[in-house]
Amino acid sequence: MVAVTGSRNATVTLPNDEQILITREFDAPRHLVYKAWTTPELVKRWWSGHRGEMKVAEIDLRVGGRWRYVMVANGGFEVAFHGEYREIVPNQRIVNTEVYELPGAADAEGALNTVTFTEVDGRTTLTLLVQVPTRELRDEILSSGMEVGMQEQLELLEQLAISLR
Amino acid sequence: MCGMARAATTADAFNAVAEPRRRQILDALATRERPVNDLVRLLGVAQPQVSKHLRVLREVGAVEVREEGRQRLYRLNGRALKPIHDWVSGFERSWTERFDQLDVVLEELKGQQEQEGDGGGDR
Image 1 (tube, helix red, strand yellow):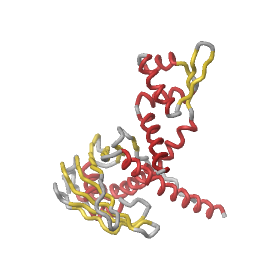
Image 2 (cartoon, chains in turn orange, red):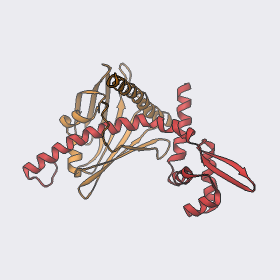
Image 3 (cartoon, chains in turn cyan, orange):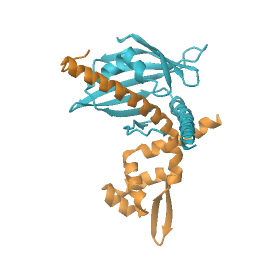
Image 4 (cartoon, chains in turn cyan, blue):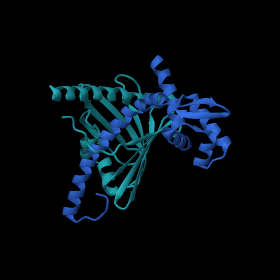
């Protein structure tokens, strides 16, 4: 059977040509959401979703500190991102840069991410605003999701086909 | 390059339908075809504004118009909206997956917190 979870979808909007806004509500107080967002061993458990295994999660949580995440995707290839923390308000707000690592290439232009955690009645709304220098980069980021998404759909289809055999 | 150009077009369409007022218009047109006056009444916005939004939606193909007598009737073009949905749905799904995993971690943290009787604080 194909598992269909009753998950609450992340909401994605494009406030302007150089931005992506991702929003999601969590049934947990914000200090816990913040903890899960900033603790390496916890990040390792959720950041890759179902797309692979986290190999590296380094977090030096201070202004000017670096972070680096490496995922080994299901296809066997590595996907790595890194950046620097620009602003940290514990349990409330983190601003950091994010660059997609291209092997053997100098750092390309990256994104400036602003994460906010807002708690109401024990539930937390998380917003992640991705600010990029150009609309082309924004569209690239969005389209990259489409390819992986299609791959996943194929896998789901395959599972479905197997379950129907 | 070809792929990029296509994505940029879809991005235009996505931006067009991301605007809250224009989403309201699309919602109103989802149930049936309507003249501008209908939309003006439903949205409580002046006609020039509604017309401006309709023009943007028509440019990206999200809305179509036809003449009937002296009226112009607007309707939703669902087919034009599908690529827009597909375009971000992969990205959206990848975040939905991540956040589903994060839910699992949070449930565990909540359990630990109750055991420890730790009512707040950072770590």
